[in-house]
Image 1: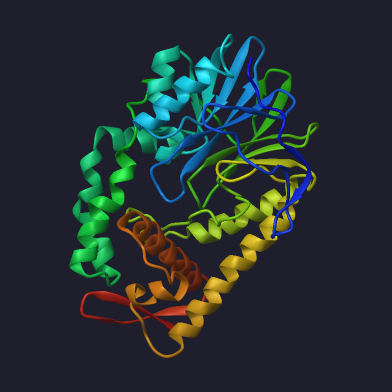
Image 2: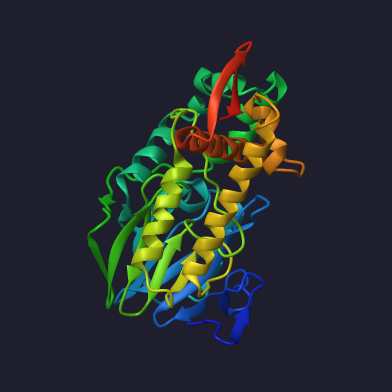
Length: 356
């Protein structure tokens, strides 16, 4: 088995104060043994965030796989390189998908059919992906265009978001007709490890995480990333939802329940130590955004679209605009629930908010 083991740093310390056991990620087609019986690999993504981490857990006579990658030819090619290289000689035993975003679940159907392995996922992840694969046209439905128009986006931007901005959501292969449901509070035995099944929210509904307490190992998916803040977005089909509130509660639970010396294996970026410090940084990040939005609204009522530049100052392509705008709405919904903002009389058909 060809597994890279030579790039471990003594203690690679990032600018955030976190420490990274490996200062550089695995190269394409390569896997690094990041912990005993745990391999770390990467697949490419066709976005600014250009990769996803995969993890392979020793499962007796084979490897249990954590996440699948997006349905693209470069991702399939990277899988072939892994299977011909560090994964050769042992079978895949099962596929655990952490959540329904295409970069994590996109190739799940392809992998389960190709290797005859079961799919393990939360019920929400399975049903969300199944719904989209059966009806991909729903992303351009009236509920989406009305949602963006009501929040002040012009027709041209609205059209971009409802077409190009949502195109990545269709990068999925058909799921198998059955799956094994993972439920928070249960345990999942993989090889010699007995993982607690955890569930987070805010970034994705019922996102699955796995924690092995004795070996201090946390597969955290996208709930906590070392350098970027996971996207937290309002869905057009749940326009009054509070994903930011759910996300902050999920972070508090992780900070309370997980040992601070746990090795954190995220869906993107570098594995790291310093979970509680990173959680504190993420909470402070969202608090700063809320304060900036409140300051902007003190000058008078604003439509949500008028507030986008307050927290996203750089130019955004249609893919990034969808994430950014829906995350802006997550902050506004949170502040409306907290009582720091209130609804103001609308201007035409556009919603407006104002400081309390």
